[in-house]
Image 1 (tube, helix red, strand yellow):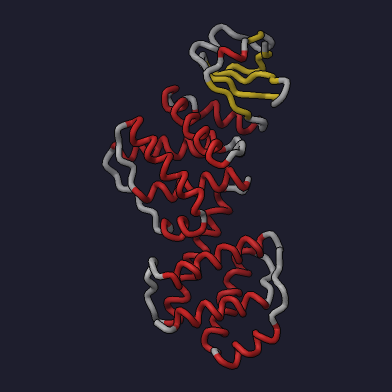
Image 2 (image 1 turned 90 degrees about the horizontal axis):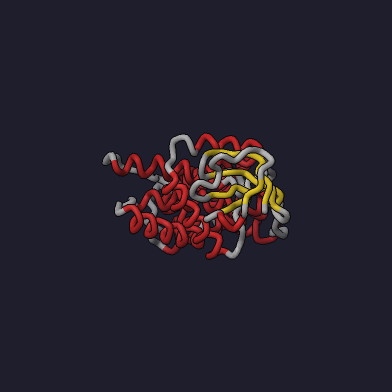
Length: 276
């Protein structure tokens, strides 16, 4: 038996749990006539998850004012799918952020409004495992609700999954994806080329930029490449100077020091692209 700490509605309560401290329990009529301090049988809950922060509990309570219980149940199934694929318990905030996002996304789809995602390719390249699971999530929603979610939405779901896996805010994850897109645009303009997003050179570049941003954010700096740097500076001055331009953009966006060695790796990628 668990102790009721808060009743969110007739079907959702917050209760004390011996292992997880506080959990959200979901079940038909579970909160009916219940008061703070009452006991409730945990096995009567159809679903349960952890919401430790008071702010998250309040946001989830507000969510229940406009999202019906059947959709809440669908979202819990989706989050279970994601946790099962990665064998990890996600940051509990995904119960709020992804539910809210998908509720309004599906509402727009049913109204015939298009969903555009300018960063879809960059997102798939940056987070391939999350993207694959997001595709599975979309298939599940399409089957359950008999709708057709457009491809662009897969990218947004991917970012929510990555945010919950890494415990980074969605704003930070979005910022990194947009930074890569900005860097690609600068490269295209500087080299006067239009990159084919299916070209292996483009794919390698975007993956490198993604890993570079991750390393820089975590301050995992690379080994010194001073001898090779001097050779590349002399052999490929255009690409070498462009690499420093890109590094300055990254430094300004990330508010982190960019190691000089990054110029070497960027120059090598840029030289391959410049052959176009």
